[in-house]
Image (tube, rainbow, N blue to C red; front, top):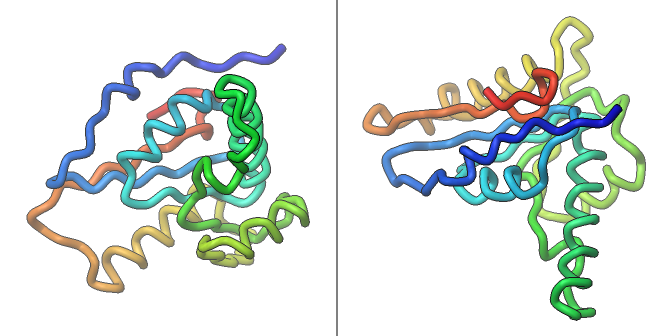
Length: 155
């Protein structure tokens, strides 16, 4: 049985210059439209390991659907959108998907730890990126949205 939880209330998010939204996408089914809207307001979209396959497939389906709906033959997968960062030990990502993202402007962060979950790897990377690299701004509010990691719920 395949089900996707309806999280359309997130579609009403607007980009706020005082809030930094970081989206972590884990390997569970997720509604593409909501993901697309969340990506638009995110300063950083991180995809964990095998979720890159699902992210790639969702974007590919969306680009095909867009072609059908607009009768256009010029839109490609690359025109939909990309994650900013892939994080993981990459034991689950398909080779063609990894190669696809390597040829785009997507940061690849290899973390071979077998003691951390994909979510923990992503959170540790965010900590490093914002705290250790000095990107944290005390005047801003930070939100982390986890998509696809909690049985389809968005928390």
